[in-house]
Amino acid sequence: MSASIGTGTLESTHLLGLRHTSAADIQLILDTAEGMQEILSRQIKKAPTLRGRSVVTLFYEPSTRTRTSFEMAAKILSADTTSIAAGSSSIVKGETLMDTVLTLRSMTMDALIIRHSQTGAPALAAQFAGCPVINAGDGFNEHPTQGLLDLLTIRQRFGRVQGLTVTIVGDIQHSRVARSNLWALRRLGAVVRLAGPPTLIPPEMECDGVTLHYQVDEALEGADVVMALRIQKERQESGLFPSLREYHRLYGISAERMLLASPRAIVLHPGPMNRGVEIDPDVADGPQSAITDQVTNGVAVRMALLYLILGGKSSDALAA
Amino acid sequence: MTDREPFSSNMPNDGAPALVEGERQAVMDSADMRRALTRIAHEIVERNRGVANLCLVGILRKGVPLAHRLSRLVSQIENTPVPAGGLDVSLYRDDYATRQPRLHRSEIPFDVSGKRLVLVDEVLYTGRTVRAAMDALMDLGRPASIQLAVLVDRGHRELPLRADYVGKNLPTSRNEWVDVRLQEIEGEDRVFIVKPPPGEER
Picture 1: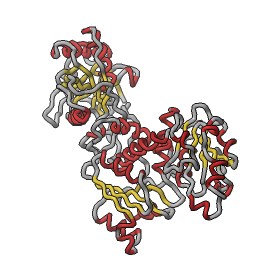
Picture 2 (picture 1 turned 120 degrees about the vertical axis):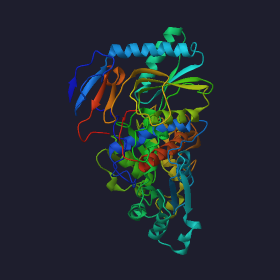
Picture 3 (picture 1 turned 90 degrees about the vertical axis):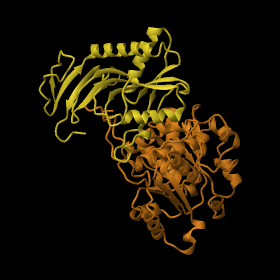
Picture 4 (picture 1 turned 135 degrees about the horizontal axis):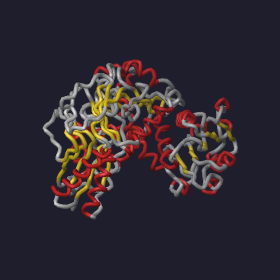
């Protein structure tokens, strides 16, 4: 009898990863992000919703797009943002993560966005922060907002995620982007193929709905979404693959290889790109590329998250 | 929940015993709603001396189907298309810290600048939603004017606002609420006053 539109509140206080995030929460974030896209298309991109809230970004690793994207999202919703980069803060004097977070807490921050090279650092921070914590990437573990923006991009192009075949190509082993995508894609019912050199794919990742491929061509066959991951040059130095040139020849996403995928397939890349290594420039800039949509959607997804995580309890359809 | 028979009188609470908890009372049926909207459509045309520069903006969620119905009616009267859109006001509400409505996408298929806008909602109560809607519209541009049309005005205003077009004035108590059911959403056109059972008050 109530004219409820469905709950508008997340089940979890923090966003530490997508592995344990419910399908309902993921859908709520994506639905909310679609509402935020409208604001991004306006001439004056500003809404007063988070007026007086302070959002802190604490980055122990370098980042351009993730941090900028979070800051733009917060600013568009009128929150105040403070950004702390490890290199120019007391962290270089040896302050522990816990003490840094407690200091920020004492300054009454309302949300903490953290990136760290250690898996689990955001979860640790969440114990001391006294406010919602969002993981902006931790070690090889998760990068949940990247997973969400990829999902939004996919859903926008296909109208659904369920039943699609998504091929992720590259350094799966060291990729938090791949992990966050994997959990969320499985939760929403996509089929996932992981492709790359055997040295860069952990065999234990094979499970129900997830297949491993050492030949990229077979992984691309009929795929709806092709996601190329950044290949880090350090991995070559540690001997995990012989050379960038060979990597490109065997695993690089070229226009020719894309012919194996579904004719409607889209190409994603989390950035920053190594053009001519994991992805060819004519694919990155071609008609199947959704890479610029990913960046725009990243702002919308982060606006949605901040809106959902900082808001009050849901109570829908109160009479006007 | 028990249904009470609709009153034949235009004054639903006139002489009627107060609703008991868990009871609802029908106050408008589909014919009443059609007549009210038709009258509002004529009033809009009369007040604005035609439909030049006129656009309708429904407040999500129930104002949107009503705005589209009014758009059809007004277009028929003047034989000129009058555009309608939908506005989500969640980001502009003053109670974000205590409750969280689900955000939906605004769909305004016209530039609001210079337009004579008619905001449309199903129920006018405290006026806070309308305040939020006006702020949201101002962020989209500079309309020439904003008017307000509501299907039901239930009183209890908390802000200095009034509606320009009212389908029905409905005296209510604060612990009741008004349930507007629409063909486009619930599959029927009816309006009820509801007295929620204990524990379900809002």
